[in-house]
Image (tube, rainbow, N blue to C red; front, top):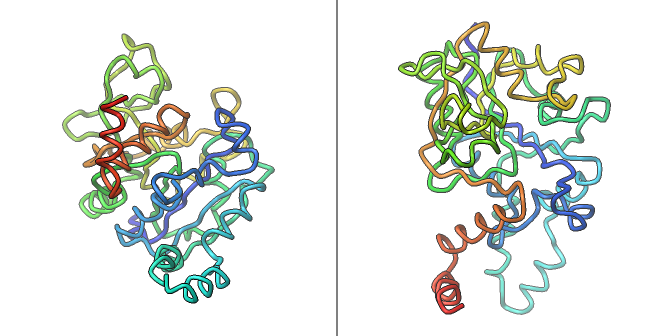
Length: 292
C-alpha cells in the first residue's frame, strides 16, 4: 500500500529524565533551555521548516500542563507591560511560538508499558490509516539540517518503504551507548536490525540510530503491550525491526550533526554548540573558555 506523504509529526516528551533529578520532577526535560528556547521548541521548529502541518506532542501526566502553557499561552499581561515600556520587540519570541504549526498536546496512555514506543502508540488515533508520519524524540537535536526534510525527500523517492530511519556514524568507542544498525543491503541502505548497545568489537557498523523516523501505520501492529522487549519495555526499534522483516526499511544518513541531550554532559555540549553557532554573545563565551 502507498501511504500519503507525511504532514503530521509525533514528538515525544523525554519521560521522567531521572539523570536530571531533582530538576525534572518539576520541569519536563524537553523544556530545558538551549540558548533562549527549550529543546522541544527546536525539535518542533525542525518539523515546521520541513513543511509539517500538525504536531502531536505526547507528554507525561505531570508535564502536559507545562507544554500547554508554553505553546498556547499568549502571555497577554506580559505583552501589555512590554508595550507600556516601549519594548514591543521583546514580545517577538512569544509570537514565534504562537505561530508554530498546529500543536495538539496529549498525555501518554498510562495503561501502556514503559518504553519509548509507548508515546507513539498513545498517538494512534491522530494518524489516519492511509498516511505516513514522522516521529521525533525531544532529547535529540540536529544542527545544520532538517532530518525531517531528509526523511520526507527520501520517502518521495521510495514510497514503497515500510519506514525510513535516520542514522549518524559515531566513533567506535561510544557505540556501546547506542542502538547500532546492521544493514541487510549496504548498497541500497536497507535495514536488517538494530543492535542495542553492543560491545564495540561486536558492533555491525558505526551507524547509530536515534530518534528521527518516518513510519507508516503498520508500525502500530507491533507497538502493542504484549510486544515488550529488553527490560520489559516497549521499544520503537523493536517494532521497526519487525517491519523490516515484511518489507524494506531504509536508512538515511543525516545531513546535519546529531547531538543528544539525554544526560547532563551531552546536554551541556549541545547547549554550548548552539550558543557558539547562534547567539550574539558567542565570542564572549569563546573568550571565557580560552581564558579559563
